[in-house]
Length: 351
Image (cartoon, rainbow, N blue to C red; front, side, top):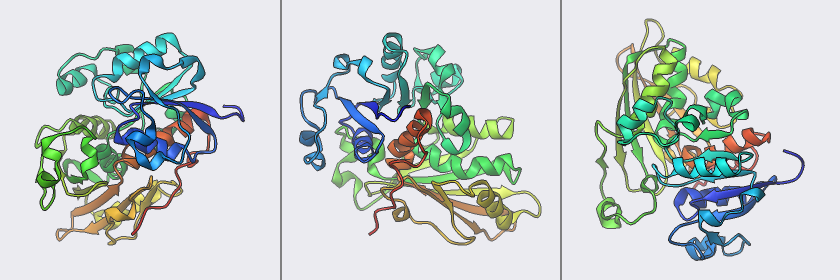
């Protein structure tokens, strides 16, 4: 981009990830939000939907069909899974100059067969699916810089991929023995009204869901298999816990001879040295979700297990920031040629 500000549209601004994009982008020095869309809430102001934006002058929410695409440089799609394919296809047909960062799952899987298997219907934009770049910046930074369409990863998958993929690539762990026990805050389920997300249904307890069938498994299979050069099928179980934000993944791995926790820690420390948004704690220190709340950081801890060849890796992110909107802005920065940390370098909100 030139020195002028990039013109940004946010599709689906009335949801949690849309609001988080607004929160991050209003302090970004090189962008201007020119369009915000919603469906049921079209015609309302952002302050009516999210009162925290009352002091700001933001565009009124409109429908996608009302967006003037000639005045947009990049759009974020924070729309429900299954709806984004046709939307992005139509936008590119009418305005091929636009860059897209998609926060849904619609373009994350490279294999059309895998998409159909996990999402229950054929992909509706196969040519774009093949074009999309999977947006884990720490793994695909150079490809993202050249992309027109970036598929922003899932929150669970980001939190697990960041520690596990470097370990697989380095041959430090056995790909046949990966167990991911992950917990998510309630915002991971979106903002729509659901009985299972009522306060009385969630508070004072926790529960597993999507056991053996959660769709994020497809992303884990894809990225772990790519790293290993062969099929890898990890065990993954997500849980809902009574907090608003956060992903907390406890990952159990088996190392090769003589590697142990020290070797795992060395691989991760070397891999993420100089990376702005991934922090590997000293060996034996355990991260907490509050360390990353509201920030684009991932904190990773490595702890010895009782058996010499078993290691516990703990990874935590904010599901709305590094797990969604913050990583999306990180991807935007690369696509537009801005410094990667611009607008998203805030420290966690603690206490």
